[in-house]
Length: 366
Image 1 (cartoon, rainbow, N blue to C red):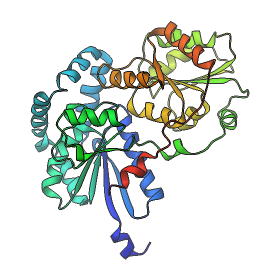
Image 2: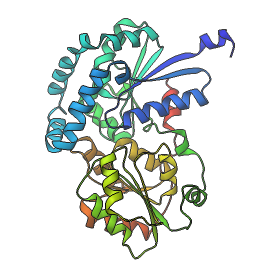
Image 3: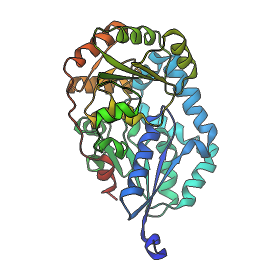
Image 4: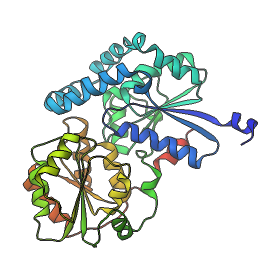
C-alpha cells in the first residue's frame, strides 16, 4: 500500500481486557475482520491488561475469577444492586479514582491518536473513555455490549455509540438513561470463521472422529461437581454419539477427568484449543456456560445450546433471554443436562440464526 493511502486509512483502536474470555474474543474478532476485509481501516486490538498488569490482576484475578468461583451469589447481588442509575453513577465516579494508577495505559492509548476507540469491556471504558474524550481530538468512542442485557454501568456519558445484540438490550440501555440515538442494533461480533461455509462430516474426520454419530461439545473452565457425573451419563447413553470436552485451560479439571473417565474412541478431552470454532462446527449440540460470546457463536452456527452453571447476574440474564427465545435450554445438574442432550439429539436441526455479520455492521458507523 502506498504511503499516502496508508495515511488516509482510519485508525481504530479496539480495547479489551481478560475477564472471562468473551471480551477479548469480541475485540479480536473486530480487529481481524477489519484488517482482512476493510482496506480503508487499520484496526489494532489492545488487551489493556498487557499495558497495565495490576489493573488486569485486580479485575480478573482478584474480583471476577474469585467472585464467580467462590462467591457467585454475592456477585449476582452486586450485579443487581448496581443495575440502577444512582449506584451505577457512584461506581463510575469511584472508578475514575483509579486513573492516577493507570497513567501508563492512558498515555499509551492517547499516544496512538486513533480516530476511534471501540471498547468491549465496560470497566475499561469507564476508566479510559473520559481521558480519551479530553485528550484525543475529534475521537469517536464506542462500546460493544457483549451480553444480552444492558446494565446501568454501560451508561457512560463519554461514549458516542453503543453496539448491542438486539432490541431487548436497546430497551435496557434506554431505561438506564442512554440516549436512544446512540444505540445501534448490530449483534455481538464473532470471528469471521463462524459465518463461513463448512462440511460437518469432513470436520469430524479432521478432528479425529471416524464415524458419523451425533456429536456433543461440552465446554467448562470451572471444576464443578456436576461435570464428571454429566460426562459419564452422556457417554452411557444408548444412542451412539461422540463427546468432546474442552476444559478452557483448567489443568486441574483436565487431569481429574483424564484420571476418572477411561479412554474410548468416542470421547476426546482437551485442556485448551485454538480451534474451538471447528469443534463447535463439528458438534450437533453445545453444552456451555451462557457467556455472551459463547451464545453468539452458537447462534451464528445455528447450534442449540444447553446452558449450565450460569453466573448470577449477566449470565443468568443471558440464559433466560436465550431460553425465552427458544434457542437453548437451561439445565441444572447431571440428570437435567443429560436429559436435555437426549432431547436435542432426537431433533437436531442446524439452522443459522444470526447471519448478519455484526463486525461489518459495527464498522459501517465509522
